[in-house]
Image (cartoon, rainbow, N blue to C red; front, side, top):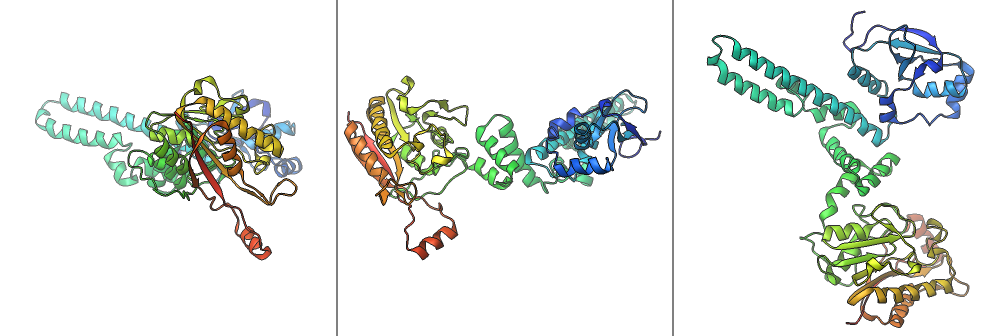
Length: 467
């Protein structure tokens, strides 16, 4: 059969038993297993059968065929125990054209960021392979030209042409294709629906960091897949990682009204602005100091320490990152934390976010148990710190919600201050860190209408262990 411009032969349709069809491994690698079978799709196939034939690859008389398009339809057919399904059999000229066909059949599919970037990986591999083939062809042309009598007088100009041509090939395209199609990254961006090369490069940066195991980039990819973050925002987060390095300019005031910064830590209940941690490290530690965060949450302290050249030990009762060790601080500090320079604590304030934390965590305990916890925490911190070390305790006032009977509010900063003094600490500083942007517009309007005050008071207590 004649080969078409798309690299596949003519095709025809026949009914094939599902047992003789095998899902494409390449399709699974790109798009995953077809687990999103809706009741509507199952019911439609149950009532009407498969109206659009699956596309399969193989020879007409093969025993099995690889599914190129129709994995969800095949999964439905298997679930409904259909004896046969209509299949359009196509014969592809190479494994590459088969893979490109799979991507093309999924062009209109609604894809996650990860699926889009796996498509981009496949396109990049395809263009790199083509560039390598062109380079080899150019070298062969050069060898043949040199072997032709009388060609020596043209050798310098030929060498210059080949060098220029190979330079284009290193970018994924030769000089003719560069004029006709533009850069490889532009072509890939258009192929996967990401627009121009700039957005594609931003997406590629985030994707490669995530593939290398970077937990913050992996968190960004998860948010991109869920549609809760844009590529540009994720890229900006990656770029801002070093903003607390050598050129860090701290505020000289004792009011730290900072906003959330997604460049540090991963999504977690009760995340705090990374700048609070950065300023604490700047004023109360030195480079290479050992910092301990016993309730690390999403790991903001860990990330800021890395950015500012501090060592960090991070713990949590339910770690969400591999760099955070599992430990319940109610059992005291681990031995490896002994003689640390700073302990930074942002505990889950009594009942304020209890529904979002572990059921066996401190946020769910009674008010008397919470006060006991604060005293035990301060005592353990005092024993663990080196002489002259600092205990930083970030606590917010609790208003309206889940208050003990008879209380109008709970001043957790006062409770923490009292516990720290009892443990032997000396007060160093009280810094206001108001919570900004925590309320929705309708909550603000309701508070005004009802004459209520919304709580934004939060304080960072800095306490020092005497030398």
